[in-house]
Image 1 (cartoon, rainbow, N blue to C red):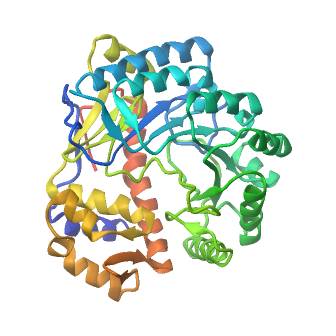
Image 2 (tube, rainbow, N blue to C red):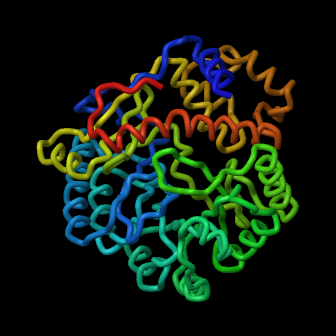
Length: 417
């Protein structure tokens, strides 16, 4: 698999050069003219640390969280002050960690953002099931939050136990969701756990929709090398069948698929912080994607705060894209939605998709990975599985390695992927 994916990357970027991240940054970022710009804010605190979770986080204390948010607001103003006028952005998402632990201060963060940006498509926040109580939900709603995503992982006690998660009060959560309404209520699940069946997953799906969700995300379990998880990943053949069965079940029920892993019973319900042409990230470990670069903030909360105190960006590593590298990144994350719009590609890069990747599009259709309808490229079940396969390999070979390094070094000199 390593050889195939490496050769694929070289072919699509037309170079043997790796993606090279260096310890450098631009004090002024060129995002004012970016179209379809999204915003992301990272809150890295949790009450307990889940062994399977790879994200940047640490144990919550009120003092530490308050200090972090003070610095976060300053970072937002540092970036926003570069604008000559308020800029329209698609959306704002809070991730973590457990952002709801800072629910009493989210209104301050949102107010800081709204001094510089106009949010068009709403504000989303991730929650732990324990935080989905009426009081917290009302606090979020009053702050302007319109979308929430609850990290359920599984309603089955045996799978929660496998993941090291405690059981939670489903009835209490469901009652709270009836009392406090949001445009989108998404619930996250993990599939490809040991001995997990399609019946287990369809039960999770239907329980979610009957308990207040109008959107679900079912992500594959990924065994990161730097986590403490002892869960054994599922074999490729079983995983493919499970992914196909999930998709076919949701399609048969009439649910709308809006990405590889996500389905809804309401066509207007959307929750995704990833599918943006460009985005700005605030907070430790947050990433920023622009047309010419990709950057990652330091994973160290202490070093993050020191940089902000010095009025310097907390960037740890920056990748300067070649044109083909940026095109590959664009196509990879656009395909996450299960379709690719050639017109959108041409608008972004100023060159037709078929001029740059005509052969690859033809080959993908011949191999049964994609179909073309009215000029739009649509991913097939086979294509979705192989996207998942490449994405999982990319995650373990690239993100796993980079995050593993950055968890140990606040500002590494260089990382080649």
